[in-house]
Length: 226
Image 1 (cartoon, rainbow, N blue to C red):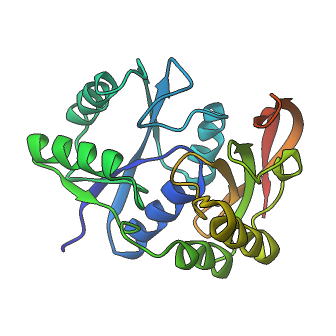
Image 2 (cartoon, rainbow, N blue to C red):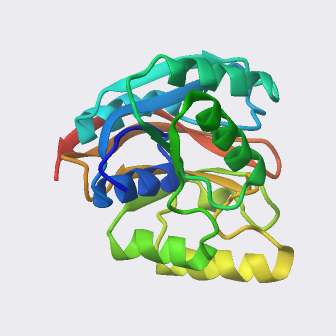
């Protein structure tokens, strides 16, 4: 596949950021970052915690950011994504879909209608291999939301490292938790990655815990030199 002009669907989480890196490593030009902003927290398609930090990610990558609101309503939000992609001058879309057939099929459909190529470099990958690749390439990833049995409050703000990967695999064996959080078991934020020119430093946070799940609201952050 010749180098394409690509829009990257990002949330700030590990999968979308790793997929973006793959697109660049494949020789494509990522010309824009696209962030959908759901109006409700139970979106079927899009990540919701700390999306305001995608502006810092855009600055860190030195790639322009396009933000667009979406209803967050099942299927309606698919049309919202289609409208924003139709307005961009790109040949392809890259997404971080790994195992969600719902997400992958919807983006496939949009791309087919718009004549775009859907690049999904993580699709079908074995979960441990995705986590291993993040560690091997020194992505700095923290957990910012946990929503599954076995993932307690102590995971908020925790870094993805060898121990965390081991525990995620154990939780998968015991409780069926997706090791990569594909079922919404957890959410992450990438503070640093190979293509970042600067990295994100968190200055102020607030934990929001609701009995057996919660998220880390990042109230203040900045870019700092690597």
